[in-house]
Length: 125
Image (cartoon, rainbow, N blue to C red; front, top):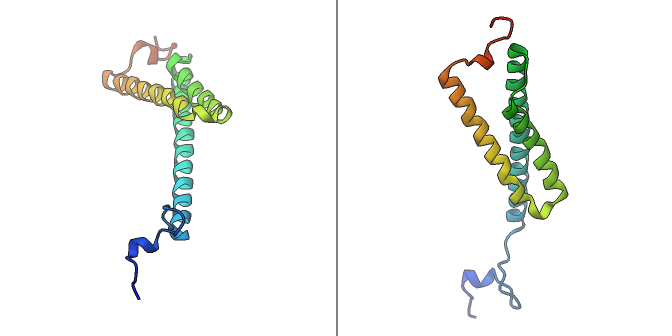
């Protein structure tokens, strides 16, 4: 009796798709769920982080900064649009990253430069 090679036993006689063990499908499902959970968590963390920074500056300087409002709006509007237009989710995700990186960069520069006039409370000026 001729024993087929191991790779041939993973392919059915009528198709050429590999017959993978069920555990691989379960692991793929768990990995996709973990990625979705991490992405959702990071989205909320970004929105709450921007809101917290904006709140601190508003409390100290008495005004909201446009970049904080824009970042929070992007963190809310684009994910909602991704739910409504699932076929364009990848395209709608890109502006979120652009806004996030611009916001992080602006905050890093603000911290490197030190407090500006807009960061000083109006009662102290």
